[in-house]
Length: 487
Image 1 (cartoon, rainbow, N blue to C red):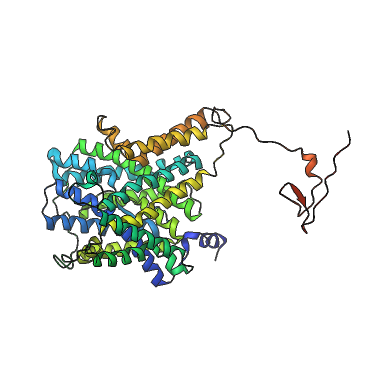
Image 2 (cartoon, one colour):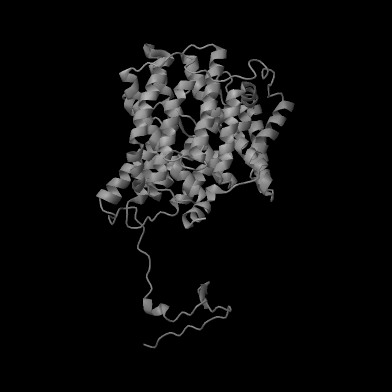
């Protein structure tokens, strides 16, 4: 084995686990993102006026392509795939744009054509886009990671509220809060158990146990699981041959730029959590995998692909860094895409159960971002202002989702996501204050200068000396006398 190969083998993400654990952790990743991956085809299918069985085909295609994209991203081939534990799936960033294309008269063929063309352009610019890594120091990545976690918490809240009549306006039923609370408690208890196989699978086990509790409480319905096909292979151009409207391509290209930004942020976030270094070449390979998957997806009836932020949180909370675990999750997604009956089983899991687990899951992403921000130097610079402004702007569309509804469509596409809002703001402010404005610039928020000790005083210290409670101790723990110089 060459030195280069030995160095590569030591990467945390290359760890291989027993097959049983690998599959178990992989299923856990799938359950974490399942609700997110089926939401876009469900919404777009309804807007396009598809029948229930056609929407089912659309969902199966998205699961199938998400699995293939995940395998490509994690295993990697030359020039494609970041080889990091990143789960891929249909990006929610493009739902509003795709809905607009559908309602403009183009239908699904126009959506698929726009996705193909915009993704090919994205594939061509991915290497250039990846060079922005130097503009993602910890003050930027920490802010974005924190925003990712905070922006996902409303998802967990939505799961707890459920889809009943009245929705969020009436609040969550007491039974939903109870079920979510039980699931949350199960997560915390299992996480505390000093057995790695249990604590690392706390999310999966809590979802299973929470669902069992839901059955006894009468809040789980698996009666429709057997309704529909058992096996189905995604049809090539099953919804018609794609068309390529110019306006649709331009609007989807803006979505692609947002996707590239969010995927770059996710790559940097997961690399920070895993403890591995990524360079512009590796980021470019990850972005190429995104764009290639997105360009191929419409052939099978799916949409743009991107990394799922919620699964970054799962890596953080479980400590399972192996990319092959996520590869197994990709395999499970492929099987779900080919076996709609299994997808219906997963889809029958009560949303409050997912919400209870999601609170810990998504909160851990924000906590990881805060840990990164703790490494940032805040003295004699504008970093505190960068973090404060970026987080605040990132929270705006989360606090008030309609805040930008009066703005132009291109603006809404970029800033409707708290993640992209925070990322764009943090990058621009970091450029302004730490690159163009001079890194030594002081501001009103800068901390007072720290005290300094003359170097000459340090010469009196010997190896093993330490200072405890204001006293100097030698290596054996004995106090060292301090002599005051005579005046």
